[in-house]
Length: 389
Image (cartoon, rainbow, N blue to C red; front, side):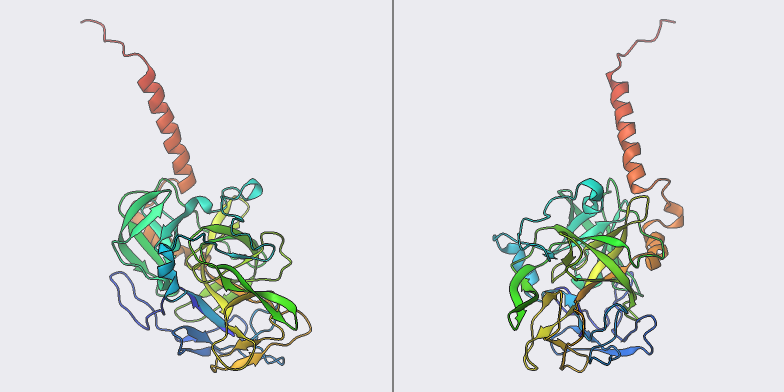
């Protein structure tokens, strides 16, 4: 099985734009995994990826667990856009510990306070992350059109330009008006093994997935729209190849605590934050998940968040199904486009040399607060007329 790229429609093979272009799917690779594998477009409109096969019949991807998953888009094809108009209670992000749709629907507190929630806005059916005084970061495959609104802290900003990355699926969107603060970028080369916080408004838990009455995980279920947050850990950096680039990969093991989560359709473009020791920084943008799965070797299968795929079939790069085996549990996972290796490009767009900010987003917000306070003090002082000449 390989990654399925999440969003509402397939990414165009090649679409030019004013500031960049969509890259055609070509090859995907993983660090230390030998030759690149050819990537093609599947009949269901999503991109599939081939991986070298292991002796268990599963593709070898992260070194921590051999598997053969196709990567699935976090786009829900048609349902993503229709769901915006449904009045039903919605949920997002799939948790191992609970199916409660109200879980983690408010900003994190305690040690996770200021871990990214404050910089997430609404971009169509998805999300974007404010990264500068006039820009937010999203992914190209969720679509959108210049002129569409971006809603941040209840304020609607009109978008005026796109800048697409040639090397990844990242897209920088410029807005009219200015943001009061913005997320700093993670710039270190040490994401593997780090704890992460991720935000999304995609599907939640659906029906149980069972094999011989043993629980394996949950299908995607419910509807979309409510922002939630969860936690996980970066297993390693996976290189998906030309046009896709480096990705942070996290597994749904069931051993990560109450907030451990997986992603689903609708979580595309959601930010991943990592604490670099001086605070939480934007380290990734949600892009893809493992899937689909099946109980047989026929049919389209189903999408699911699995903590153990053994006993099921996983879609392979030949449009067939591979039986998942192994001595230990084989969890599925999600992929987030890595920000650190594209930080220079991001800064070149958001802060060109002639517009480099003197202060970061948080620093600027503090300074603005101090200046506002000083202005209030000055205005409160009585006006003393000048002495007569």
